[in-house]
Structure formats: structure tokens, C-alpha cells
Image 1: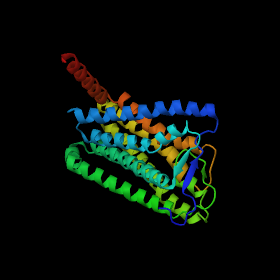
Image 2: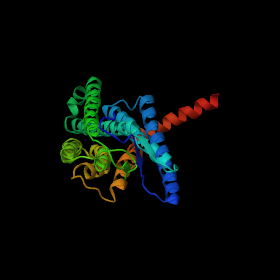
Image 3: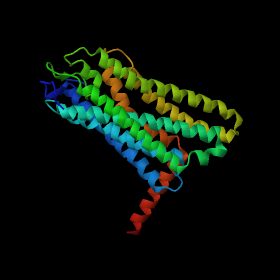
Image 4: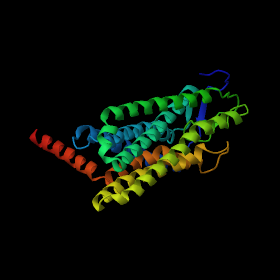
Length: 310
């Protein structure tokens, strides 16, 4: 993995160089990461344990929570540990692995959000055909295709990263390895690779966002023909999905759909969609979803009951 390179390791500058602020970074993002893992694992366990959450929507929510946990894990632990480290060194191989995992689980999250939008469209616009169209077999095939698509995307990203020769400075002005900060260190003309990056990651983010927003506009428009109770329930579900889409795709589009330039806010924007969004997703889906909250209460009640019997 180190062809044409004199650089065998990189130094991550992180979010800040100030020792006091680094301690603040450690505390804040440790809480965020623990909250992300616990929140998403709680959703995963609840969906797997509850018989009332067997619809396709919760099948996809299960994989969204799984992708969120893995996506956050690809960056947050390194950021947390580096906040207390004197030297934030990451080897070349570890850096390439982080690029791969970041894009694998990030792309999977995008595809799952699209599948959730498709599920809501069929449920609201074609309710009579919903059980047939969104059968468990179809949902499983769609998830498998999502994993395959994510793998292909991340392979394309790692191929671009491996083509970059590094022969000079090894200071990455970021808290993780990604193609954008690595392009600044490459000792070659990166115009073509950046164009490929924009046409790959940028196109996926932008086109997916447009598709999702159009689908939700169509869904919301079709709610006129539903009863007041049906409109209220569908609107609550769709609002949760739209909030997640905007929170995730806004920063993603900002990072991956522009020329090879950097801004002071890049790291904060990246933090928002790699750590902030996975932390907020469980809160959004549980606080706005009565079925998930009821299933969690039931699961907690069963656990307390079993503990008391012991």
C-alpha cells in the first residue's frame, strides 16, 4: 500500500492545538460517541426484540442505526484518543483503512436513507400494494444491493487515495484521513483525481439529496387524499426522515462537491456529519416515533421484571 511514497505515516493536527481545548474536545466527543453507540445499539436491540417493529421501515432503520454506529466508529475513537495524545500519528495503512471505512459506512447510510424514502413512498402512495412490493425478501435484496454499492464506492475512493504519491510534508490539517485533506499533501497535480472525487462522492451526495427531496415532496403532496389521522402519522414519520436527510446531506454536499480548496470551517462541518448526525439520528427517530418509544418501554419493563424475579 506504500508504492511511490517516502511518507510512511501522517500526523493529524486534529480540531485544535490548544491543550485546554483538547481536553474539552476529549470530554465532548467522548460523550457524543458513547451516546451514539448506546443510542443506536438500543434501537438495534429494540427492533430485533420487538414483534411490533417488523415492518420494512424498521427493517431499514435497523441498518441505518448499524451504519451510524460504524460510521461514527470510523472517526470518533481516533479523534478522542488524539485529543489526549502528544503526537497524533497515524500510519499510512491505517490512514487508507480509515478512508475506506469512512466511505463504506457513509455511503451505506445514504443508500439506506434512500430505501427508507422508497418505503414511505410505497406505504403512502400505494398502500394496497405495499405488502407485496415491500416484502421481506425484496427488502433483504435491497439491503444487499446497498452494501454492494457502498463497497464499490469505497473501493473507488481507496483506489484514488492509493494513487496519490506523498514525498513531502505529512501534516494533515484534519482529525481524520479523507481524500480532500490528503489531496493537499500529494506531490502531483491532483486536478484529475479531485474531478473524479467530485464525480463520485459529490455526485452520490447531490443526486441522492435531490432524489430524496423530490420523493418527500411527492409523498407530502399525496397526503391530501388521506384522513386527518393518517396525514398526522405520515407527516410525523416523514418529518423525522427529512430532518435526518438535511442534517446529513448538507455538510456532505459542502465537503465533496467543490474544487480542491479548503476553508477554516471544513473540520467543523465534517464533525457534524461524521459524529453529530449519527448521534442525533437515534434521538430524532425515538422522540418522534411512538411505536419505537413504546417498544423500548416494553423492553425495559421486561428487563426489570426478569431482574426482580431473580
